[in-house]
Length: 114
Image (cartoon, rainbow, N blue to C red; front, side):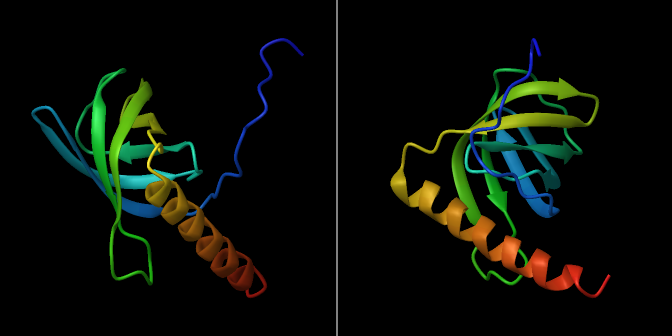
């Protein structure tokens, strides 16, 4: 299976609103496939590969936005783009892990009603 890559971290398929900003750019969008290492975003402001962004994620039920000071754009396709988080700060990695755990619980809890 040439080209097959295993994901390092669990991905959460739950939509989370996000604001992003970088050099001379500011936009809003939706985070998709959130993981400890990154995600992809559908946004309203164009970005380019290699651009560094700061992210504010608005997690449902959490009064404080999740802040990622540095996320690098790894791919772009129209209004969608992938970012890799710079999670060298343990507090940021810990908070992302907590958010994913909380969202996984609420996602699994709501799936029984569908």
